[in-house]
Length: 224
Image (cartoon, rainbow, N blue to C red; front, side, top):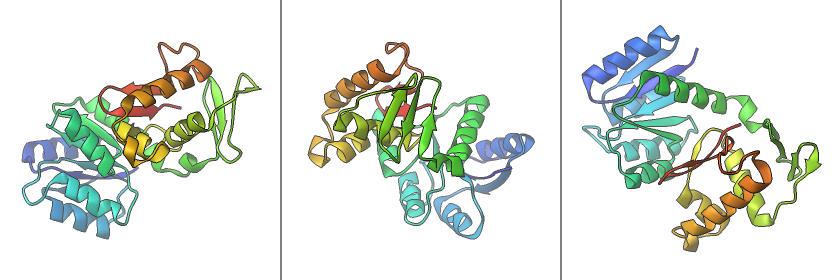
């Protein structure tokens, strides 16, 4: 099973996660501060990082920055910071997901499973299939029900960014910056319009999407 690096300065949470994750087959590497976390990531084969933002020696955002300097290991933030700004800041720094405290173990386990799947070789496959549509990343083609779906260049750019990050929460600012440019980082209404267009073209029920999901106040997630 996967090896999870848990970074949290609360001993009771650290111990509870060690016990529960071990019971579900994970190997757990604990760290109570950022320095220990960065050292562990450099010396051990870590598959997923579960990271608290409020650490005694450095902010969790600095840990994310340190990790992203050399590794793409999935990072799940587990924090008591509930504000949308905190979530967006962590995601923009390089986190893959964000879970707020208090949290349910089942939800965390599901996020861990999703993170390990995304980290595997399947995440890089050029052909992405869902129950409703197929995206050929190599040839820039989309099909639904066996028929081609016409995409504008902007629609394709948004869809490609989401599909290349299956299961990962992609922040509004990241999408706007990568598709439209840094000057449009706050123009979230652009994104709402294009997401609505994509859902009309690709989802069975655009009002209740199952693949192109909204995470209120944070961004969007592609669920294969």
